[in-house]
Length: 103
Image (cartoon, rainbow, N blue to C red):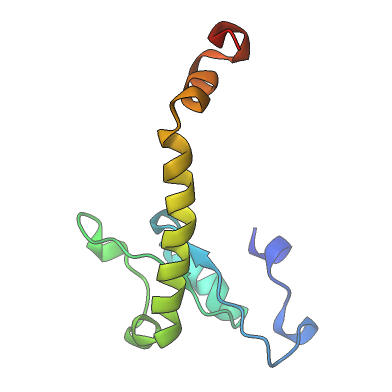
């Protein structure tokens, strides 16, 4: 999956820093190691409760100031999806289909 999304370091500009943001489900050692091999800074949210032993980020990755920026941007995106779920008529279409909503 990473090969399709992220080009190897030799094929991209050195001044560009790639920092993809990812949800907690991507907090797997194999995924994080794949990002590090490609010289990509992982911005994966961490488990707060429960699976704390699955957190794979190092202390330097956690302390990176760009991580806070990534977290704020992710929160903005999540708000949009939350607002769309609050729209009742759109929710009815999703659950029952356009024909049954009688629009």
